[in-house]
Image (cartoon, rainbow, N blue to C red):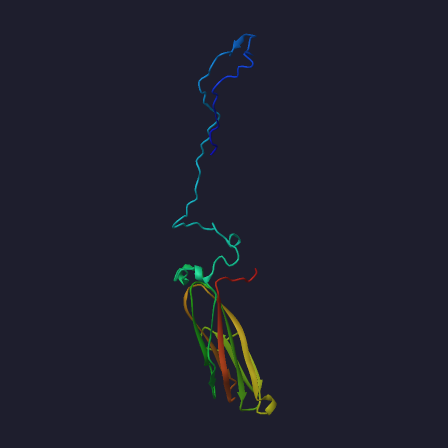
Length: 218
């Protein structure tokens, strides 16, 4: 705001007693005493806007990561339970099992199982690994990662014999499952030996990774 400028005149100067005005007329100021003249030069009033804190603001995209300075949001600045799984977009997730052993396996035997809960549709990538020990010569084991309970394509195969160098072989693979619904999903490592083969399976483990988006290119 600009303040006022006030000029006060008490007496006219008597040294020069005439001033010219428009039209050539003369006005005499001699022996004249002027009252106090108050002249207001200018008064400017403005309204000052003050920012107020917004409350209960719901605005998609109002504040992005580029609007935040480094370390602007830390654990100490977030209220307890302010960020909960129900308030977040569907996250990725992972799970794994502990090793198991199976001896003298038979046809379509479930060696290992993993169950996961997914929050919405998405992709579940399942990994399985184990090693087979062959107790008969020229043996072969056939396995699959499946959401069923039988050996089917795609196959994971390993072969061996009772010779020391060939008695153990790794069985491992990865398979992706596209799920259209949320909920509990179960996947199995199912194996079977060739007819007449005596095979054991050790240290069978499975892991599963969930992602909400299928990134497979067309």
